Amino acid sequence: MSHSPRRRTAEVLALLLVSLALGASACGGSSNPLADKPYDASASVGLAGARAGHKVDPSKPLEVTATGGDHITDVTATDAAGRYVKGELAADGSSWHSTAPLAAGAHYTVRVSTEDEEGAQGRRTIGFDTNPADRLLRVAFGPQSGKYGVGQPITAELSIPVQDPAARAVIERTLRVDAQPAVQGAWHWVDNRTLHYRPQDYWPANSVIEAHATLDGIKVAPGLYGGPSKPVRLTIGDRVEAVTDAAAHYMTVMKNGKTVRTIPVTTGKPGYATRNGVKVVLGQESFVRMRGTSIGIAEGSSDSYDLPVYWATRVTWSGEYVHAAPWSVGSQGADNVSHGCTGMSTENAKWFFDNVRVGDVVKVVGSAGATMTPFDNGFGDWNMPWKQWREGSALMAGKREGTSPADAARLRPRV
Figure (cartoon, rainbow, N blue to C red):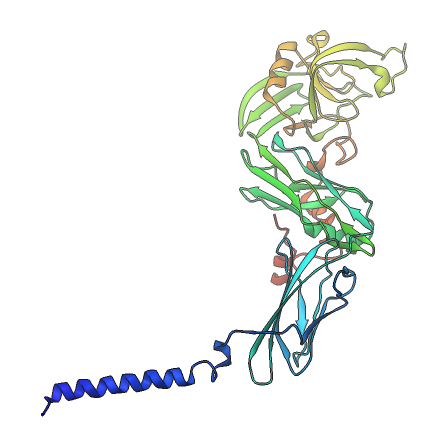
């Protein structure tokens, strides 16, 4: 029985497909080690210094070794938070060691890939814990979460003083400030335990700022590791600025760049001149008892006073306020007769009290007084030039920005 050419062609193609399928099944898997299931490399892969039921010393490097003809092709080590441990693989694949310190009191997972002499792929996963730290360094952020004005700095208070520049740099790298919208900002070491963070200019109005630390478990110095910290979230309100011209005896209050009120005031008289410069609202009290003895005026002297004061907005810890001063209304807008505070009518003081919040900016110009200091009497942070502020960062110490494009990019603070 004869077949048509078309039918014979179809039969030949079918036979070819069957042959190819048989050939593929005959050689499947064994000729391609990469297609095989990885073998258990537990017998050939070990972790130096790790014993069952014992914790690892975080001050020592992590080392993975391979024996029995196997060599290591890849290692990933992560802690419970997903942070990777940097490391180096030996050229011959016999070992891998960490190049960054381990965290104290942490759990790690090490995943090792190997290859034997025939090219087969092996795997081993090892889990271990590190010893807790001898001492823990904790950081407390400030202020507490809430709504603030555009001049409010972020603060970080350390539980243990830190002087060493290298240790300071380790700490500062873990202190993160995320702002929406983003701004350029930097940390400044006020002293061995205190850091302040501010942008180059005031925070943008209606922005959101979150400050947190990744210090937990990080080695800061021998025997000193970072501890847990609580993040803070700040919501910034409108840009409210109150500018007092002590020479003209008037305060101008602006909201988002627009003048909303002009207030006649009196400021510090000779010998008690109000401080110049930018201050930040620290708090508000509807009633304060003000006494001259609190600022060093002897009781019974011609300058002594003891007064009930209403609608007091504090701008320094030493007792400088913006407040109601009904006894000096005749001098407001014309003369400076106070002991350093900014006085105004009761009506204006109540309006000011109701329209500013903690973190808003109060600036004084034209006074015979000294300039508000940056850190020792409230928040005078904005009186320090930006270049000088950045030089107070441990990450900028000893470096000069702009030596090359690469340096400029590397040294630019991250928000």
